[in-house]
Length: 285
Image 1: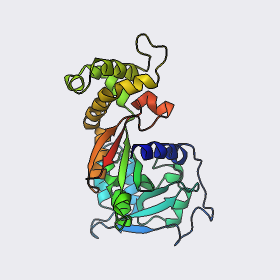
Image 2: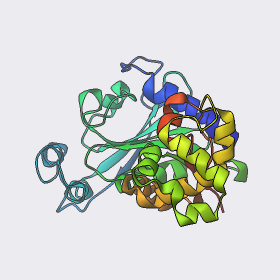
Image 3: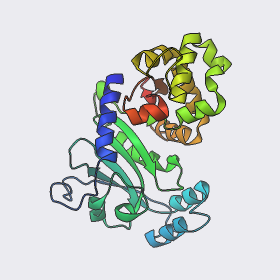
Image 4: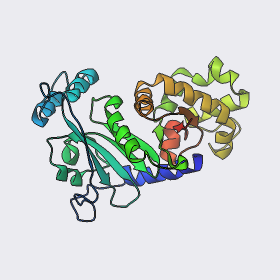
């Protein structure tokens, strides 16, 4: 699983950070061939049109309060669209209002925020490659729970897959280093009980982004030495960071298993600087 996680993080960089907006080219979007619909209906008496929902999400309280925004979305008929990345490396699941034009998904921009530009009518998105889901995003201020519909759609598609192809998920921890620095969490009793002095010293170096005393670089040796302490920090952070916890719960509301911290799941320099390479990985039961 860990090697697959590393490989998919490289894919995520291609699919979500290094991509320009894609127009409705024939090889990207072909109704009936690349596109599938799954509808989630509200009750007829309370269903919001797309225009009404867009208005709710563009002004207070829906533009500021996650609960109010989610309540408005719950009153609307929604649709799940499938958008294959033109590189062929991943598929994006998109949550949109049922009133919106299905052809509009062809102009989806995986590198841009949801709710504006080419993604003006996209409420949530998830990336899938092979049997792994990752990169959950929602239109601000919608909570991650809204994206559970996308997890469910992916799970329904994979329902007949063999055991070794059952869906799992990766969740990034982009605030882990900042969180550890803010409270010098490498000194926490729980972290100390699960590691040792050398590991905690190495974890401190990673959180601060500087070499350990007596070392000239923050290198592989430091990351290796930090593993027990950094995993303990990552697991504590997973429970305390509200955004991360919300994303974990969105996956767990559909998929079985438990999330565990994976050490050095992503060795990208930018990610090492903010998370020390750790990610939350869903382990099947």
